[in-house]
Image (cartoon, rainbow, N blue to C red; front, top):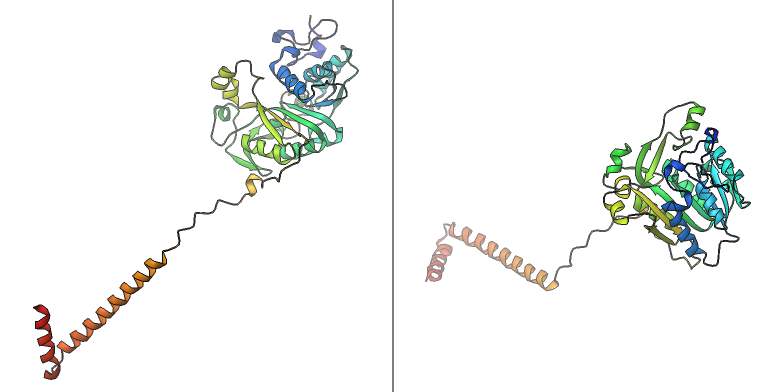
Length: 332
């Protein structure tokens, strides 16, 4: 069974308490989604003693499927969604599951600092729809107690197939980060914008951060353990060589605050001084002394030659006679 056309779902197939599904044509429910299973493994590793009392916020939660599964794990789960059409779907799910620990808020992700403090932030399919990703992640870091999990597109210094697929710009800088601009939409009416379920909200272009810069940023804003998760891929070899991972530059990144003493943070990538050129070796002082002696000898020889030439040119027999005799002796 499926939901009514008034609450048409486009992405999340949530299994409701009565056994119905919100988007059955997709072929599997949200608990079987590879991303859901991957995130659950991370959460279990972070909280081996259980999820009771732990909070998670799904920023840009779309239709509430991920948040619902986190609530079913026992976490206090909150979903934030800006679009009215998606938010209505979230409320439909909320009203058809018995999960008092599941809540939804209609709001803009750029206002994330207003929604409070959470142990875990889950950001799926959102970061690459923002034009100020650094500001957003800095706000997240200030309100995050333990971990940030990001399922997102990135870009690279060299052009990849994704650059053409998504009409990305040439490499650019934004907020001190390298990346590429992605065109979202033009000036459109609010009702039409509301129906663009998988697009940005206010900004007409979004910034895809270069992967290395995103990893460095996560470390610099307070997450001392940063890694990429691969088990969210069903077929790791296939997806990384010929599948979506290779073609659309999509990654799962996990950033954790371990609680260990922080080491001094290196300068941001864009603020690091250039590597100094290697200094030339210092000259050997013995070689310098020898070169000076040779130069002195050459100068003395040249001076003597000048004096001899002048004497030969003289008409005084008192000078020329002895010099001619000396020249003959030297020839012998």
